[in-house]
Image 1 (cartoon, helix red, strand yellow):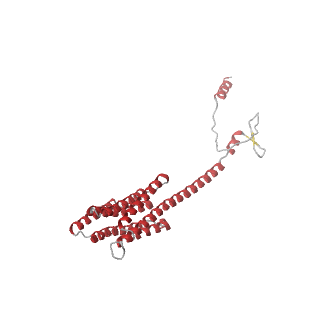
Image 2 (cartoon, helix red, strand yellow):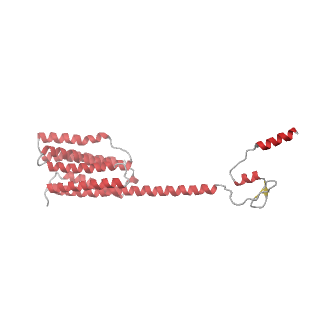
Image 3 (tube, rainbow, N blue to C red):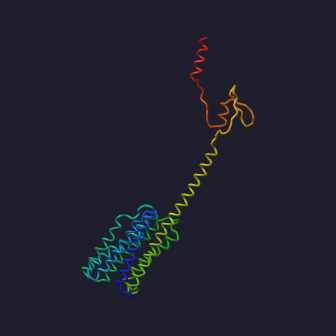
Length: 281
């Protein structure tokens, strides 16, 4: 089995690759609310692994970095999920005090006891607190939005949290816990991209359906329009017009029957002058 430092260094490289993939996806595809928080969570995860590597040379600094960025990672995961499915922030900004409180607690424990077991247990406590809030807040998401991909992704996240919580116990070795954690992070990132693609496909299908309905309404409207076309027989003398049945009618009635137009009666200047001239005679 590889030593812990090698595993952490490998996890840092994998996290960096995941960040690059998510940034590239952001540039070439449509993203939804919560995407930036997911990128931030992977960045925090990578920095937390860096903190683990620093623990051998700078114990207090390494512990503080681990505590802060690990709790921030899962908090950003939670916030990103909720924002993705609700299209708005539903987590109060006060939740982001949890990493700060976690750091304060670990500094107090380190200064008084310098016990690594207590420090990890403290970290597990704060992450467990985020786990409980994850379950409570995700219950607010409507049932119809909880598809197979979401359930699988949430299940992996919960497994990730549990693996971290159990890593401070004698039942799970730290090397195995960190290895599984890294594997789960890769799978969760892939699932999150699949969730984005699924949502984009659903929006595309909805747009196509709306376009089809709009075209149908337009066709119906155009079918209801009354348009005159072709040659229309008209009398040179009385200006009566012959319809399709062969009967003759005055021009005004023909236009009224064939179109939506209506006539307003008046008198043109030429006819007015003729009438005035006839009256003077």
